[in-house]
Image 1: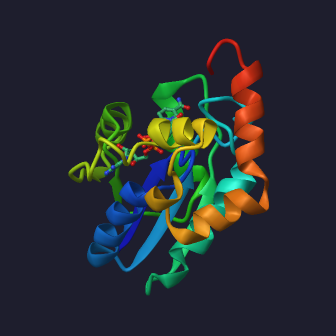
Image 2: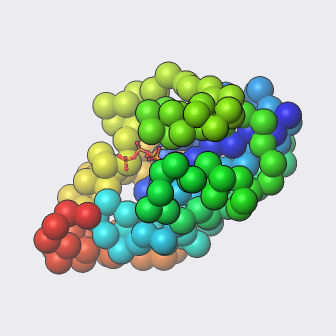
Length: 171
Ligand SMILES: Nc1ncnc2c1ncn2[C@@H]1O[C@H](COP(=O)(O)OP(=O)(O)OP(=O)(O)O)[C@@H](O)[C@H]1O
Ligand SMILES: NC(=O)c1ccc[n+]([C@@H]2O[C@H](COP(=O)(O)O)[C@@H](O)[C@H]2O)c1
């Protein structure tokens, strides 16, 4: 059985990683969708699809099932989004998400959806980690080591600080 897990992963953090570890117990192969692939260089979406592919691919190296990391751009039409996702990914049997819109769209298209509990949501949240990146708080303890290495390699701390000074509408 092949599973599918989608997120923006801005950045990929230990909450996502814990969810992936649990999904890996249930499926034989995992497809990870990098959502909003066209977005980057904003406060909410600082990293490019390629940078997020690096973060996720390296963080998943220790998993003992095959994984595929696929960037997926947003569409203006929610009603055809599931077909768009399916056109970009290996065929999957079950989708994993805690995002209510994503859950609804898959269910309406007849795809089985599984949800997971939120792990340490007070700190394991993309917005919290991006805030710490800007303010100089401890963000490295909230992401897999491979993600911290990638963010340093791409000079991501400097980018997100610069963006936060100039991105006036907060997107
Ligand atoms: N701490 C967590 N525990 C379990 N699932 C999580 C956790 N954080 C996010 N998720 C789930 O992972 C998927 C992808 O999440 P996403 O990339 O939007 O992260 P986020 O932390 O919610 O980010 P942001 O604050 O940028 O919206 C969603 O289904 C989301 O609900
Ligand atoms: N119409 C669309 O393009 C559409 C619909 C639902 C979800 N999505 C994307 O799926 C991803 C869901 O991930 P999150 O759970 O991290 O929000 C996001 O990138 C979101 O933009 C896109």
